[in-house]
Length: 114
Ligand code: FES
Image 1 (cartoon, rainbow, N blue to C red):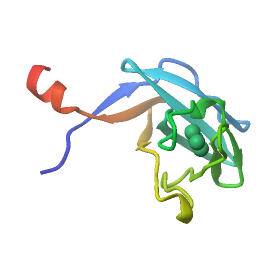
Image 2 (cartoon, protein in one colour; image 1 turned 45 degrees about the horizontal axis):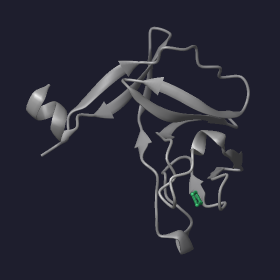
Image 3 (cartoon, rainbow, N blue to C red; image 1 turned 90 degrees about the horizontal axis):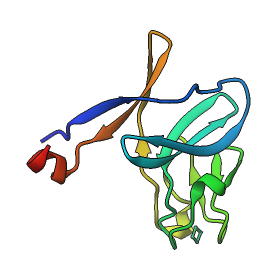
Image 4 (spheres, rainbow, N blue to C red; image 1 turned 45 degrees about the vertical axis):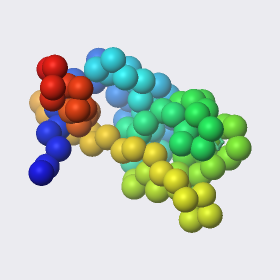
């Protein structure tokens, strides 16, 4: 069964002209918004290694670097480097009528109580 995705309007203006890694608060979640060399990505903000805040990280090429122990994650797929055996969650982003929307899968909790 396909997981349902809910699209949430991004509450801030997304700057598509320069590179950055920053926090994005949407739908009660803190996500990580990345703009790197023309690629816009939204990922989870918690590092799967030991919980560091990835919004304090930075990019090198197409990798997001965790500020704690320097794990590296692909900003297109969320995959960690091979020797890490981990990944970060990616959230789809779409633009409609000049506004950005982030797609968040409904959690089991939402399905039961939403
Ligand atoms: S907490 Fe991110 S690499 Fe260790």
